[in-house]
Image (cartoon, rainbow, N blue to C red; front, side, top):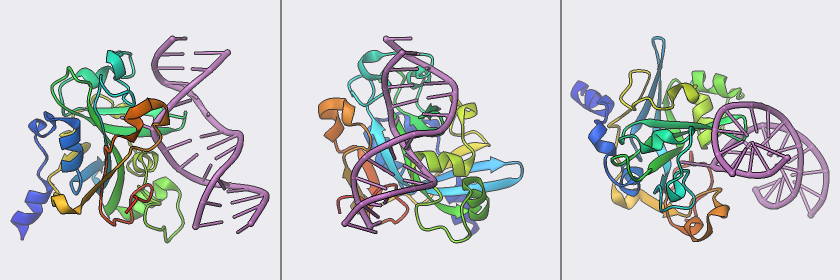
Length: 210
DNA sequence: TCGACGATCATCT
DNA sequence: GATGATCGTCGAG
């Protein structure tokens, strides 16, 4: 029993991320995102992700090889966190993938609270009985619940303060895919089925087509 | 329950 | 000067 718990909390190695963004996006479902604040621990099970393929993906911040101060982390080796501010008030957390040339990353869009629910509710300024998805059902909500902001940009995801652990990896038949959210500007790339979620999970950011 | 809308600012052009 | 990988609120039905 203890061995099982240890196994679930074992940090994913950096090699986990040195694969295509699409592979990593699927494989991150069911993994545990663990945030340590002081001696408190917050744990989410990842239930929704999106792959951004990098230089060849119009929806990606690395589209066409663009390099800016904001996105430079995308060109580091896989395994780092890419965090950016969106709409002036929310943050988005990504895992950088592959080896550093491609600019690929995986946006962590939603999580199911496992440990520290009350603390997350407080950070989200929620009432006593939140509905599924209120706490971390969206990239901005997730970062707010876990107190993730620009401080973590460039940090590796095996850091004590923010890491991703083995968790309960999802079986292939429990994973559904759909077009990504909020990338209408990206032409044909907008319809690529690079959004992944656990089938039927109520904590996702927006309903899936099935 | 749903669609429209505006907040707000680091970063980019 | 413009923009955005979002979210909460508000009004209509």
